[in-house]
Length: 90
Image 1 (cartoon, rainbow, N blue to C red):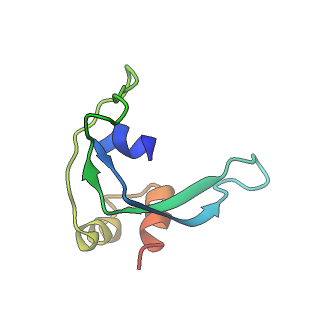
Image 2: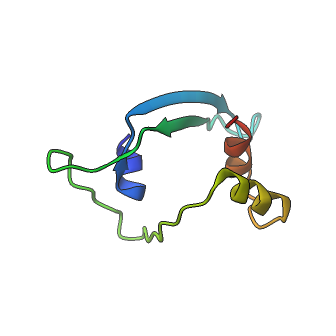
């Protein structure tokens, strides 16, 4: 929930864990946990202040799920965590 506030300036009303996957089993024990965040709402005055790391620079843009899937098919999105995450969304 904190990361959502930091990354896009919104808080989720609902959080659902979709799955846990290991990107390099046998090499390391890193696990990626995927969540679906819904019922998003803007940060309010009682929310903790958002602090980005000095090396974080974001340009927030919105895409439909169909647009993201088309970008994957065209090879514009190639990172595995994004492809797996999108595949988990019905």
